[in-house]
Image (cartoon, rainbow, N blue to C red; front, side, top):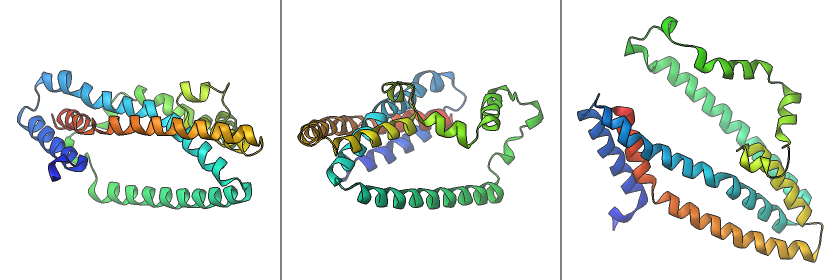
Amino acid sequence: PFYTQLYFQVLTAILVGGLIGHFWRGEPWIAEYLKPLGDGFVKLVKMIIAPVIFLTIVVGIAKMGDLRHVGRIGLKALIYFEVLTTAALVIGLVVANTLQPGAGMGIDPAVLDSGAVAQYRKSAEQQGVVPFLLNIIPHDFLAAFTEGQLLQVLLVALLAGIALTRIGASGERLLGVAEDLSHVFFAIVGMIMRLAPIGAFGAMAFTIG
């Protein structure tokens, strides 16, 4: 039945959350009780991203075997990423300049506290090609996962996948272990996604309220 489909449950949760946020707008319990639902779901998703990326890349590279084939796919993926990122930026600029979101809120930017974005501005000013490349290299193997740096996870996964293609029978055995682990983590992803309606409900109720 359609009501058992995840997309229908998410859309229904968004609608219900929006209605609650609209009719009880300004009530403190909206933020106090419903915002943690959205925040908790986001944290669950972030928790699982790094191991899923690592295992997917490792298994994919090790199964290909031919590193030249891996390089060709990597180049295509990079071009695909750059093209879509540029398209997304263009769409964002067009929407921002056309619809001007936030223009009717009556907020004077001069009176806003800029301290919240000061650290991001400082980080952007100091960022360059060399610091960016060095930041991709983690302090140690586990730091890539514990610090939540996905580019570092990607680098470690690339190295691990290439290493598995070079160690013969041991690599094949480890590849089997990695595949089994990937099934476990994708099963966890499936369980987390079942909570998506709850997260969408809490986030929408907080945003509208």
